[in-house]
Length: 334
Image 1 (spheres, rainbow, N blue to C red):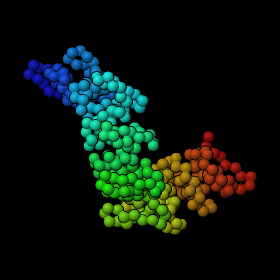
Image 2 (cartoon, rainbow, N blue to C red):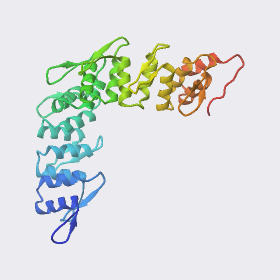
Image 3 (cartoon, rainbow, N blue to C red):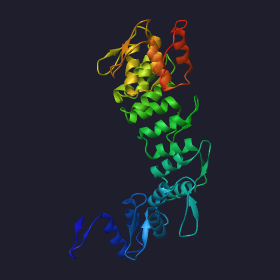
Image 4 (cartoon, helix red, strand yellow):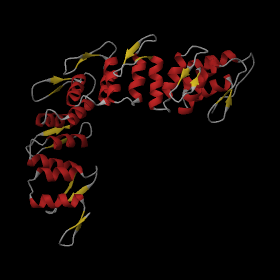
């Protein structure tokens, strides 16, 4: 808050209300007041009107029909299927508001991002310059505006089918692997990028990162664990691809085998069906394993846990039945 010479103590929002009082056509005052509020909140202006966020962004647009920030923030406040009427009579939905924001500023990354995330697969959107773009092309526009956003490369990689490519504005034609390598360049501590790249590589395939390292599937999963030591899927993937007797060395210095990696996967996700099932399958007859919660379990108990996590997991039922003697029974979780 700040104390004025007339004795009033005003906060940020109240100061913007005063700015609107001084100039009821000041787009920036309505815009900043809207940006300072949360959804559902209202503010009373000096003229007695009580406005919420959407109405304030509409006022900003009334005062300046080229205010890109107002259009995109108004779009962000709308639910899918919701519309809003502008002062000029047009009724626009979420996507159309983002298109307007791009008309006002063709380099507005958040508008392209909001637009691409509001489209369905295969849907096209027409911009004011006449171009009809799909999700992949909109992601390329986001990358043009900001070529160093790791998450955008991840999202675009998610959109591509195996073997599919997309042309970026710098002329490169890239597929899933190259996009994920770019994601790692932008943020070498993003576990999602490493795990996704590991998942798209073939078992004996390698890929070169921007730092010069040539890495395979296993090393990418190790990197994912470095970024997030509680990433269950990375431990599981390492265990799955390790040969019996082989060890994986983590960045913390530990060398873990197949069973230890499945135990780590369960530590991170207590309901990991496949980790319980595969750990049970990796044990020898009569062998037990201690989990991080202190439980000591044998094959049967691990398969029972797998069934608890997913009663429709066929392999756990088959594996459990295969180790039971004729006439032997086992108690399942209710």
